[in-house]
Figure (cartoon, rainbow, N blue to C red):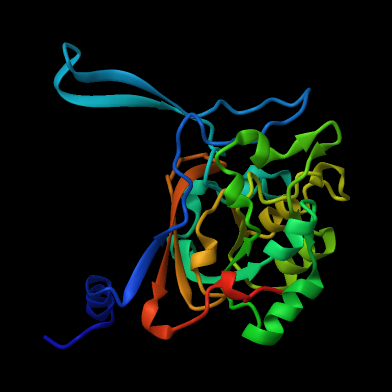
Length: 272
C-alpha cells in the first residue's frame, strides 16, 4: 500500500523519530489548586471515593467516584467560563480541530527567576517573532517560566502573602493584543491560572480571561515539561472531557516532537 500521511506519522511514532511528551500535571488530592480570597467561593479539590476494590461491592473489579471542580490541575478554560465569553462555546462545543495545533514556546525563565510577578509584554512576543516568525494561525502560545519546579508544594506554587499571590502572567495590553491581533487558539501556562497572581487588581481584572475567552480563545494551566519542546515545530494535542454546559475540564495535554528536526528546546535559549 502507498504511504499516507497518517501511516507515515504512525511509523515515525513507532521508530521513535517522533517523541510524545506529556505536558500534564498528574491529578491527585495533592495537586495545587487556585485559592480565591473571601468572599469568593472556591471549587472542591480533586478526590477519589472508593466504590469497590475486589471486595463484596464489586468482587472482580475496582472502581471509584471522582469528585473535582472543572478548573483543577492541568485544565482547559472554555469561552463560557468568563463573563466576556458567556455567549460562547462550553467545553463540549469547542471544535475538535482547534484542540490540535502547532505549539509556540516562549521562554521567560530568566525574567521570572528575577521577578515572580513578571508580565509578558508585546515587546517580548515581537522579539520572539523576530527569530521564529509571526505566531502561526491556530497555534497555542506556551509560556515557559520554570514554575513547574514548585509543583510539589501548594504553598510554593501559589506563592501567596498578605498582598496576594505572586505568580507570572501577561500584561494587560499584551493580553488584548494577543487576543485580537494574532490568530492563535489559546495560551498555555505552568502556573495555576492563565492570569498573573495579582491580576485581580489589573484594569480590566484578569485580562487574559477577559480578552482571550471573550475572543473565542482558550486557556491551559498547570503545564509541565515545556523545556523539552522546541520554540517551534511541536504539535500539541489537548483532550478535555466534553462536559455539556462545562466551563472547563481537567485535560490530558500531549506534545509531539520531531526528534530528527534537531530544533533546540525552549530551555536552550529560545526565549524572548
